[in-house]
Length: 322
Image 1: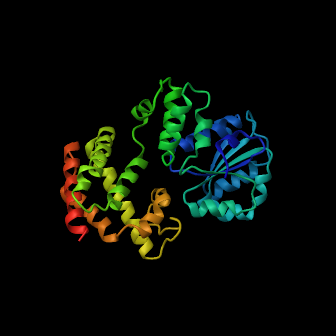
Image 2: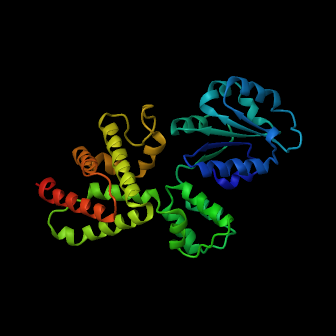
Image 3: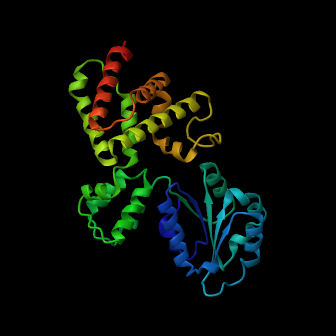
């Protein structure tokens, strides 16, 4: 696995990127642009046969007013041309950024005979967070909080870095949440908890229910009640799709190579929960939660959310445990 640090390594000419975060993509682009000392005239988007041919004409020529060419390549659109001209990646006058949209393409490029820095930024590792935040006035404790809380939400990590560049003071985890909001990973976790909870008695409502209420209120406070409802409902819908794809035999041990009608980038963020979705969750229970959220409607305030939770858990006790 590659790293963001290697973007500045002069021995690395080719970089492979899979990222759903716009800010992560911008960071990679800006870092390579700076490394190449590039101007607008020395940066080329390669996304068609004509632009690929133009790249071939320039790749071994030293650019004017820049150290190297920067070629930003849309792999999906020119993959067949790349496979016929692999020698271009040996160029000493160029740096290449290969962008892909699916894990299938990411894996395909990695299997080519290219020395590259592979950046899988659908998630972000702790070491990468530490490197990104090094040099800022932020304590190790807060860095650890960012790394653990936003592991599945790289956009928020890069957003925090941008705020720090703009002079924001970050002294505690609360400051991070105030600037970046709750991680959407917490929404996914909450949705999974709703689906894996198995209350057997009303004693559950006196203990675990209170914890769920606290989490829900935090989500409503962070995103707004209506938006929190939308996020949770969307997460349940994603889980429903994954369960359906598993039952159909489309996926097994990893969420990848999905039919075009599904958002693979979005659904792949549940890879860490795939085993639970496959073996622990009932399809009918997921569908029931989704339909219940649809029928009760959006939440105008956190009290609406709490009322929904109460209704949901009562049904789990009196219906789903029979």
